[in-house]
Length: 240
Image 1 (cartoon, rainbow, N blue to C red):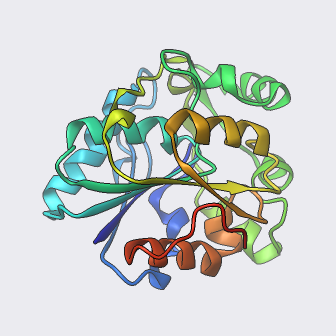
Image 2: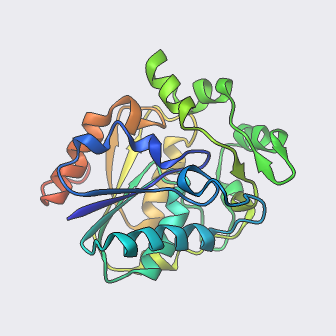
């Protein structure tokens, strides 16, 4: 079993850096277009299909076939498109505070109203930013100074069009086990919205006492769930 990690909005694949050494299986953390190894891609006009194709390209190039797909935050709307592209390779899915709005609706309609306003205020020419204050107050509320700095080091600009494009959840019809890790102290994507997303995807719910960037602030606890899942030992509904 291998792990493929899909990061959230405004992040690079480097955001998984404190989690990946703790995982017992092969790990592929993929950069979506416009960031990290794909920073050359123009963010303006970027689509969800572009994101899914980039992740699928990395998976095919790696040669891995027995995959636990892990999607954080915005990765929750990229994951089903990857699942649809590579259904024979996906064995199970883990959604980490993953944003999953109702099918054929945009992400921007399924986030906190204050966060929506903040993103609109920070959008210029189709690109938005997530500054240091928002990082501390939204993403990394439970992080110490070192953890906050780590998150800041892996924050980038992102495409506003990705938040307003209608999502396609048809890939979630793939009949594979799935678990939703709900983060109880998340100020970026509220636990209530997480619970709705879990129900929407038919996922079993596991709860951790963490803010939005659990892979940074409590990586050992996240790794424990993923490693146990790889060996089919996670009890749905367990809290940590």
